[in-house]
Each structure stands twice: as structure tokens, then as C-alpha cells.
Length: 161
Length: 195
Image (cartoon, rainbow over all chains, first blue to last red; front, side, top):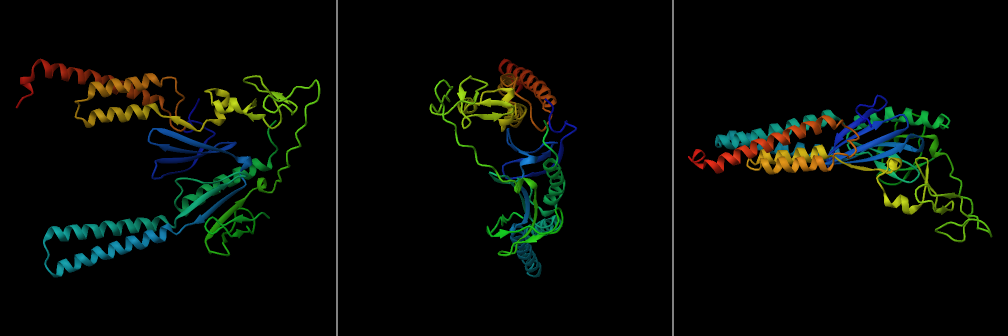
């Protein structure tokens, strides 16, 4: 039995990380397979392309909250560094507060560069499933643009005998 | 056109425009969405036909005596009515056989979880390294035990685990050999290890 990575008919359409572990989504000719690796266990869900009713990508407010928190932290540590410089605070204190401000500013830059946060839901007749590992609008859109044509083609073509 | 509930506020959102184009906005909470609706959403499921009652001389369902059997279970052979017939991967199964979740290639479509013995062995071997080699004989043997116990286990669905399993075997043997040699030397000539 070949793994999805070795299967020439399977394409990885998304991958990412969650708190629980690594995730990846694979598109095969008939199914969409979502695999989550939890420490030493692989858990997977298969969605028949012919049974998918809808894909919904939507923006979440997590990104905005994260931006505000990172911005507040950056400003706080930057202000502490400026105050420390003007009051001739000990050097280790300046290094720590300056380093923290720089680190938070860098995180904020990466966060902004990654784009807005989003989630992707798969609707079938019996469930609504949020694809794990899709956290950004850009990655969700990429997956949507690859899965949607395959699902449409599977549903418009007559079923295999 | 089918309406979908907004994922955030549950208000009804009607997708407009051609498939693959445009972005919707929830009329209630204003969240931006992109919705792709497929023909499967428009299909109306026909309700199941009323269950036929078994008459004299007709086989009855094992689970519902009053209902006519339509098919035997492919695993246990019990007669099943249309309600109890569960088609899985080309087989007709009864609820009991499906519930037993027997390791069977025919039931592969139902499988939803796999253990990764290569990763278990890897973490055990790492524990030996973190103990600075003191636990090498134990962790090496434990890793070998895990690899042997799961030698017929189905491989990872995503990665090719054959190479990792071979590497884990080699590292486990190395840990056992080096760890045992260290402990023999330590017990035979402890003065070499004292400062």
C-alpha cells in the first residue's frame, strides 16, 4: 500500500500545524483526505468529492486580536526601552526590554505579512467540518481553488459503474 | 439556490454569482466569506421506502423479526432487512459486524486512525539520548520491542515509514550494544569512571 506522498494521483492541497500536531489535506481522484498527526497517532477523515455540498471560507477575528496584542506588547517594551535609555537604566534591563520589543515587532511583521486569518468549512449532508491547519485566508483560498473544481467535476460526471 | 448558515452568527447567507468568483458578506455580522456550493447540495434525498413486512415462508431480518430480509451479511451470514443492511466498500454488513471493527482490508474505508510505530520507537530512542546514554540498554530494547510488536501494522497513510523503521532498528541495536558495553565497563572497572 503506497502512502499518499508516494501516490502519483494524490496531491497535497494544504498543510499546517495545530496545537495538537501537524495536519495535511490530500486530494485524490475520488476523495479529499484530511490527516492529523497527534504525537504518534494519525487520524484521518475522508470526504467523497461527490458528497461535498459546499466549501465555505470565512475570515475570523483572531488575526485582529493577535495584531492588537502584538502591537500593544511592542509599544510597551519600546516605551520601556526609551525610558530606560533616558534614565540610564542598567544595560541588562535595556537589552531585555529592547530585545523583547524587537521580537514582538518581528512577530507583528510576520503576522501582517501572512494576511488575514480564516477558516475553511466542509459541508456535507450530515456534518460541517472545519479543516484543521487552515489558519490564513491565503492558504484557505489556495485549497478552495484546488478542491472546488475537483468536487464539481466529480459531481457533474456520471458515477463509475 | 441553497442558503447556508453564516459560520459565525448562523444567519442565512445566499451565495450569489457564478461559482468560483466573488466574495459574499454575511448580511447580519458582516463577515467576509467565499462560498462554493456544489450540485450535491441541490439533490433532495428521497425518503426510504416503508419497510416491507415478512410474510409466511419469507426470510425475516435477524434483528427485526417482522421485517422481510433483503440481503445476508457478508461476514456472519445473518439475514438483514433494508434498515440493517449497511453497505461498506462493496460489502453488506450487519450492525454487529460493523461495530466489531475487525481488522479487515474490506473494512479499510472505515479506518480512521493509525498508530505510527516508527515515531513511538523514535521517541523512546530519544529518551535514551536525553538520559546521556545511561538508559541506552533499556530504551534500545524497548524500541526493538515496539518495532517487533507492530511489525505487521499498516504503514503511515501520509509518509513512507519503511525507511524510518529501518533506521529505528539500526539505532535501537546501536543503543543496546553501546549501552551494554558501557554498563559492563562501568561495573567491571568503576575506577576508570571516578574522578
